Image 1 (cartoon, rainbow, N blue to C red):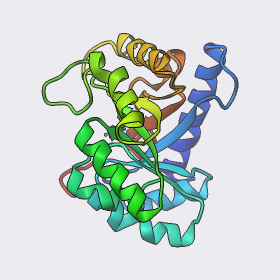
Image 2 (image 1 turned 60 degrees about the vertical axis):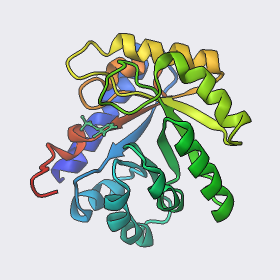
Image 3 (image 1 turned 135 degrees about the vertical axis):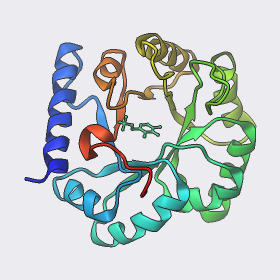
Image 4 (image 1 turned 30 degrees about the vertical axis):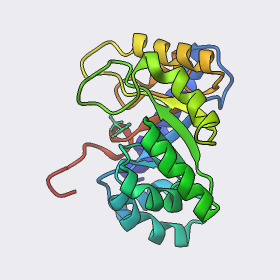
Length: 225
Ligand SMILES: *Cc1c(COP(=O)(O)O)cnc(C)c1O
């Protein structure tokens, strides 16, 4: 068994255990395997082992890898989990099934226009900058509920979920709790939160999907990716 397949099995077992520990139904949390920087040779065995939902953080990189993989495996769900520029909206709408990083009116507007034009409707998540970090994407927590509402009333798009990336080095629990609270206020049920280092905590705080990369694929080598 290759390393990535063992990694996948272990992450799935840990998610199941975290669901039990949190007294949540089995299967309540879905796994998004984050394949950024990894090539087709690393991703293929993970698909063959049954994983179907994948996350990529760059439109260009995803466009280079996934059309080939989708020719072989038709039932892939691809999620954009990295920042989106409005000049990439057309490509993102064409390529992704879920876009998790809607965080400003300009992007919501560009996505709405493209969805209309292409007749394709990727499911959309709003990214919330729970740590209010200067350099990080995401709508500020205090603006999030109003932004979700504007997506519907001004831009005509439906928001399925919320996503966050807690600040590095901070206890993630309060950030996950804040995201869950905003979702409740906004009437949203899906929460994308938790990565390799903290997905069990995210499951305890109500994540419905976790985005796990290195715990499956091993460390990323940005030098050659
Ligand atoms: C890279 C990335 C992940 C996965 O990170 P790991 O720590 O490798 O699990 C999750 N979410 C986002 C937004 C990412 O960019």
